[in-house]
Image (cartoon, rainbow, N blue to C red):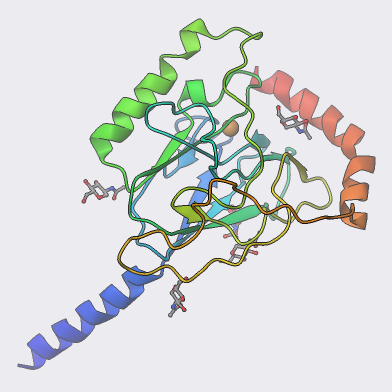
Length: 246
Ligand SMILES: *[C@@H]1O[C@H](CO)[C@@H](O)[C@H](O)[C@H]1NC(C)=O
Ligand SMILES: *[C@@H]1O[C@H](CO)[C@@H](O)[C@H](O)[C@H]1NC(C)=O
Ligand SMILES: *[C@@H]1O[C@H](CO)[C@@H](O)[C@H](O)[C@H]1NC(C)=O
Ligand SMILES: *[C@@H]1O[C@H](CO)[C@@H](O)[C@H](O)[C@H]1NC(C)=O
Ligand SMILES: *[C@@H]1O[C@H](CO)[C@@H](O)[C@H](O)[C@H]1NC(C)=O
Ligand SMILES: [Cu+2]
């Protein structure tokens, strides 16, 4: 009787917890990471509607994106999909930028890294899937990797994603941050988005508008001006790390 009661309480607690979880995903590895630099860790995530995925740009050094794609075209941005933009993290950084994406649908959601340097990350396997089957993930990742053989520097793919808070089945209320000091963003989404409380039915209740990101008028902040000033130093540091990566 008692045991049954506690079991019931425990499973209720577990169900309540499962409704709103925060899941950490590391964006990019470093030289000591098993599996290398070009990966999301974990790359496969099961997340209930309402869960928040905290993408942590802790790959160090790194310059990666989290951009929505599709299973059929895993290394190109989905039109109307979400994208963090390129987040550059110089070697030796601490306190990494993050990006919080809320899951609004239980449908499979695919994402990739659009960085082409020193070799297209996606073609090296840097793809991720939310609520995807392990078999589909393996197939999609190997189809992405198969593209490496035919890549040339003049290729227009992987395409450059436009920064967007809103995607298909997932959305972020703000862009990645902090983008201060030595952290530099490129093609990052701006402004803010109010995300309607997702229903637990799995129906997207927001973030699926084809238009994507809102387009607020913003003036460069002191922080982003500072980022521009420190850009050459960062570029130099990055250049030396790119040489190491190659
Ligand atoms: C996600 O759920 C599916 C279906 O239950 C399961 O096959 C898969 O292993 C799960 N993936 C992860 C990363 O837990
Ligand atoms: C991101 O990852 C780093 C390194 O693992 C960790 O120190 C940091 O706390 C993480 N950030 C967040 C917001 O969890
Ligand atoms: C990060 O990568 C993007 C795309 O390759 C590039 O445009 C941007 O300049 C890079 N950022 C830095 C700080 O090098
Ligand atoms: C993401 O959420 C974590 C809390 O889980 C918070 O510490 C972090 O500042 C958030 N990141 C951004 C860019 O809002
Ligand atoms: C769970 O997430 C939903 C949707 O984001 C939110 O409305 C609700 O307040 C959250 N509940 C808790 C206990 O955090
Ligand atoms: Cu990458």
